[in-house]
Image 1 (cartoon, rainbow, N blue to C red):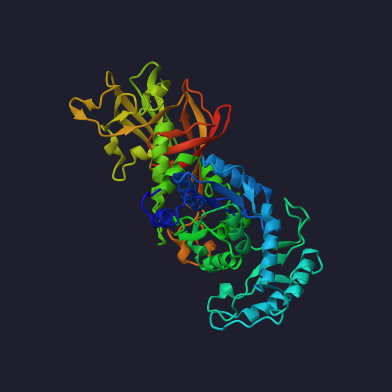
Image 2 (cartoon, rainbow, N blue to C red):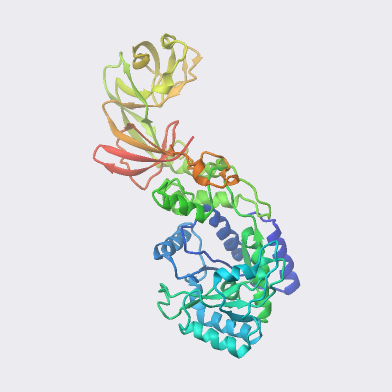
Length: 533
């Protein structure tokens, strides 16, 4: 995290001015989908600031709406945060833990004539609320007495009303130019089973009403959130001021994360899921934490990326190459080096008469990992793209190149079928296994290979960006920019050695990219592409 940013500057001044001894923060996710990488930025800012000042960082699940609250989402949120290595204060908390206290605060607002029970149907109230061009109109129920409002609010709590037939509103200002404070809803009726409180409640506080109160109850000093909550800050402060809360938490906003080719909107991600454009929230193409994890991204790479971002109030579009840099950088030292050929053609070494093993490092950047032995023979698979010559295939004859970890070869003949190279015939030069020079001429081309006799038949799942447009956010309909070729499956061959493949290991395919194993069965392996070079 940037050690100099506007939020830290504010906190430093508050510490001096108000003699603060402890800084507490929180992250309060809405369990209506999986967390995405944009949430990681918010989590880190809150977590690292609390850590910097030896304070507490809380996780509080916003379960104020019993409709469509899925235990799967909540479990995934908690598991994701733990997988990232984020340590929070105690156990995760829930807004429902404070339902009794929040209800009491609502009664206080009623007694202070700052809240009332409104029985206008929602459709009619929308007309009363007005819009940006027209000021609001007071509800006919706005001036009920305190006793009446308490009685009606208790009736709401005890199930007297049907859903949408009554709600508790803050009494602020229907003539305000700011629509948010035109008597917003504080409580609404929902006859749904809550996953924690069951049927104990049929009225539920709104997020705007509950989260500032929960911040106070948890002794949160700073509510740090993204800019979309900026307009609601006036309501956050109005509620706390109206309740005469001392040492109230302060809300500050920072820019949300936007990345090329990705959407970091849960609403839009849900569209991708519902339209079956992806297989689910954890699809490897999704920018959710679970999706990135399934793709093969490490927690370190995600944390390092988010820590590299500045904390400002200015929205910007981050290059996706910045995100990809951190996973490449992390895997470069963790991955096992493997040779794999995806678009194979056969290469024959006509003067090689016997098979033998070649010793290669598991990771040349970390030789402590050890070595493996690859079987080398006179029939090899090589990449077709290494031998494409658009002018004349015959120009390949006489070309000299080197096999990775092996010998220098010279092409002496090629076989062509239907204008495509089918086979390549070579000779090898002895005593060149560790050389890059042949007769004082440097060999510029080094290619990877796989033995035709000793290999695993492999399938490779390659992922592209879901959206074709670098910044589709400028367009309204995201479905117009879906990349229909965001998954491509190819078949090829992967080296077989004394090394045993495992699902829990990262692999770097020479000159191709980074992969992990999706499935392994007998002599076949399915590899999952994490990122290309």
